[in-house]
Image (cartoon, rainbow, N blue to C red):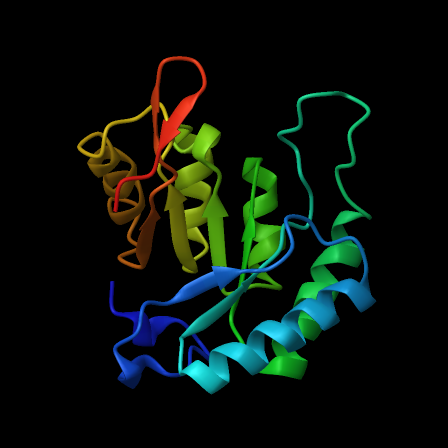
Length: 179
């Protein structure tokens, strides 16, 4: 994908890798702003293209009583403030088809979590927003099988697709990220 299609992505001329980083989940305004400020300062200094990552909700938790978020609209508004204050693009996970259109109003990139990357309806809904779609390769998937997830995006009329390697499982608990 042509990275110049990501709004507000700076330092592309540096030739550096680009970084998606931030809190796992948005837990509040102060925390998000403090993290964004530190990472923006560092990536500006090092000329690293940077995308702020924060989930507005965490639907894929192990336990039913685990923290899932502070409320969808509240978290999405915080993500928008990070975008406006620090002039950086924003990526957030979506977990349900209905999340795609809602989150697309606030962020630049919709991310499909690794465990959901084979969910056709979810991938197509993200693609149809016209936003950049970041597909996280499931640990259970081969690199070759990701072509089908990418094809779901492109066949939906969206050429703006990224892939993030999430590693590969060997056995039940040994994960390898092999770049």
